[in-house]
Length: 324
Image (tube, rainbow, N blue to C red; front, side, top):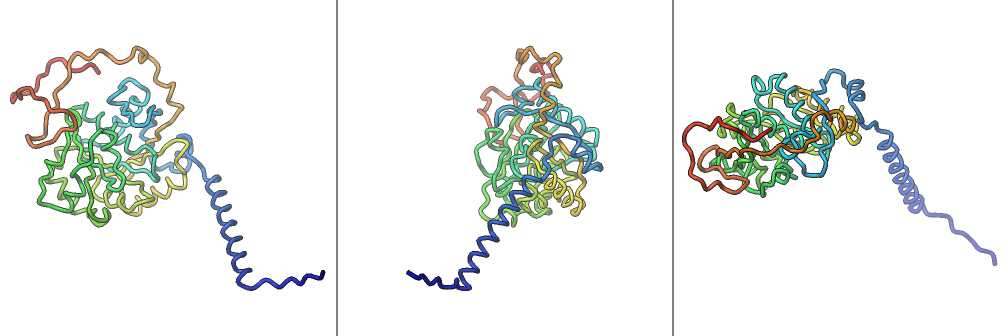
C-alpha cells in the first residue's frame, strides 16, 4: 500500500533543534570541565600566579574530620600547618596583621580544616586566637571542633543587644570559637562590614588574632563581605582538585576589592607524605600534665565538660606542660 508521510510541523523542528542544542551544550561543558587545568603542584601556581607567594604545602590530613596539629602533632600534615603558621608570622600576622580571612574558590578544598589547624598552632604559641565560623549557610568549624550549633555570629549581627562573650566557646588554652549562629534571614543581608567590625571590637579585637572561615568565594557573596573586615586573605588550594581557572578568578576578585592576598596554601599535597620522616616514628610522647582551659570570663561557655575543681585566681603555673 502506498504510504503518505506528512511533512513535519515547524513546532516539531523547533523542539528537535532545541534538544540538539542542549545536548551539544552539555557535551561542550563536559569537555571544558575535563580540559580545565587542575592544580597538582606548586609549579602550576608559580607559572600562572607568580606574583602570589606560596606560603607552604600540607600533606594529606588522613581521615575526614582529623585535626593533625591537635591529634597528631608529629605527623607530616601537622608539620605543614606549622610551617605555614611561621610563614604568616614572618609576614606580620600577630603584629600589624591582626585579622585574616581563609578562602577557597570552591567547596571541599580544605579551608575549614586549615583555619582550625592554624588557630590551634597559634594558640600553642601563647597567642590569643579567635576563630570565626563565617559560613552561615554550611558551617564547618563547629562540626570539626565538636561544637553543637548554637547562638553565634548571625544572632549577634541581627541583635546588637546580645552579649557577644556569651556566644564564645573555649576550645583550648588561648583559643575561642565564635559559631556561625542560627540565621533567621538571608545571611548576605546580615553581613555588613561596619557591623562585623563593631562586633569584633565588642569581643575584644586587638587582644585576639582573628581567623575568619568563609564560604566558597565563587559560590557566595558572603566571602567578599567577610573579607572587608580583614587585613589580608589566605587562599587555600587543594592539590588535584582545585581548578586553576577558579583560583585565578578568585584572585582577580580579591584584587578588584583591594584585598591583599597574603599567599596561597597548597593542601593535600602528596609529595609531602615522605618529606618529614626523621624522628617521627616513635608515636605520641607521654603526656605529663594537662593544662587547664582558662575561660575568657566567667560567662563564657565551654565546648567540653566543665572543670569542677576550685579556680586558682593567681598567676599561671609555669611548671611542666604537656609534652609537645
